[in-house]
Length: 349
Image (tube, rainbow, N blue to C red; front, side):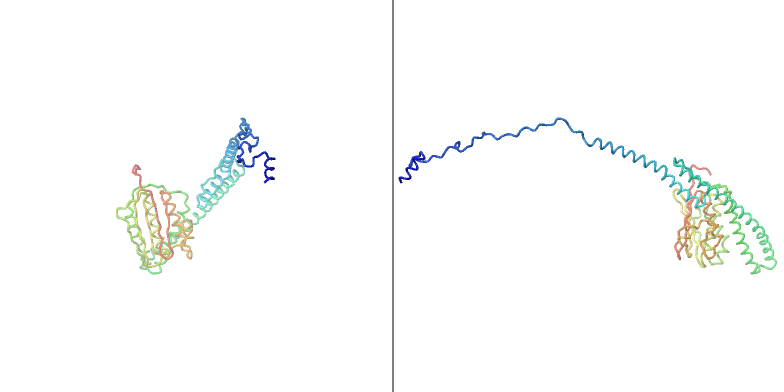
């Protein structure tokens, strides 16, 4: 107890006095009563230049340069090459009047065009010499064949249509037809197209009657399914030769006991003529070249008559402003599709 009293006295405290909590201020450090504020950030009033403006300028200049470069490439190379490709297709189809015309600034391209034009001129000259030679030979062959035909006709009357003479006459007619087709195919003069309204039913009936002996030998039936008042607007001579060649071509190239069907369809601005047979058909590779000179759907016999006949048919149809296509499936059918424009109501006949 004594020691306790001494301790309290040394501490300046009463032993039994109630202890008072020290005021809060006694425990506070000597800091300011408000939080210290951060020093203000100095704002830079000078704005940095935006990056988008020079970038857009560069892109714009680059785009203009690229467009100019592409235009130069197109004018100097792409367009001339496309023109060359198109003209070569026409030359391949036999249109040697095609000219290579180009205004390219490229010297090499212009020289290429000049070389191609020289090549076409050379082909035209060679074709002209070839045509003259073939026409001369055909004329020389035609004269004795015509004379032979007359002689056979006299002998037939004398010997009462002997079987041997009938065979000679048939062969003679084939040779004469072949020579006439050669002369027609290589005749550079185009026929004068005089379009008029033609009753196709009557023309077809007349041709069927003319070709009946030829069809009867193979027991081929020809059906005229054209309406009796079916009208086409074309050159009379042309349409007669077209129908004659196509029907006779079908008779020659299909087997015995088959059928040929002829139809006509009138559209709003086109007239369609369909000549279809149920023969052996034609393969796709032959169809690609069937309208070329000397092409033949019968490769084993190489019928020059059929080849030249179809070449002439297409040429006549083209001169009348029409088109011809062929559809075929082996061992099923072959169909020739002719399209001719109908007459304009304002067009005078």
